[in-house]
Length: 182
View 1 (spheres, rainbow, N blue to C red):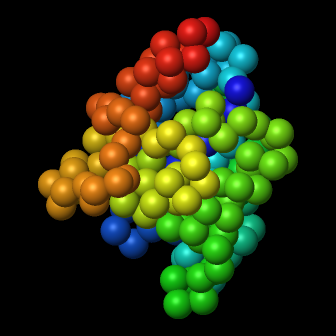
View 2: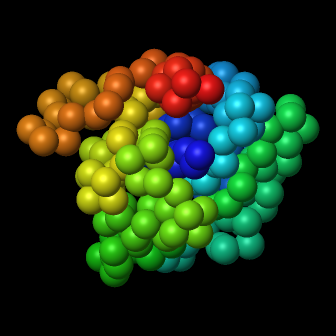
């Protein structure tokens, strides 16, 4: 089974200006442990992340690739893995359906992994993550890390209720494993 993850605020600390260099990428507590747990329970893992800093000229594709290489390497050192990373690099004003709240990246991942939509959780911390999951038909888990508390404080729109609200990625992974009966 496939699990889809947002990146900033779910795996790593989010920053108002974005993660514009490798030294600004800091794993959230328990995030690596969560990725290892997914891998050990035979889940496939894909990240679906908006990175508009590339489209806005604030981050080069090569630096973004280095950040992702580091993230995957650290997770692999701990015994986990990330199977694929989907990135929407366009600026918000040039958004395509790939950019969340569009469902493009999620639908691409579902197709690539031949995953069953109803069994593929998407874990995120923002309204646009929830909207993308809803459009794709994936059950959504809202984490309180990152912008999750802020998202909850603003109120969740009717019809977009998450399958679960969890403290962080590790709590979400435990919920997913329990839900899957793994």
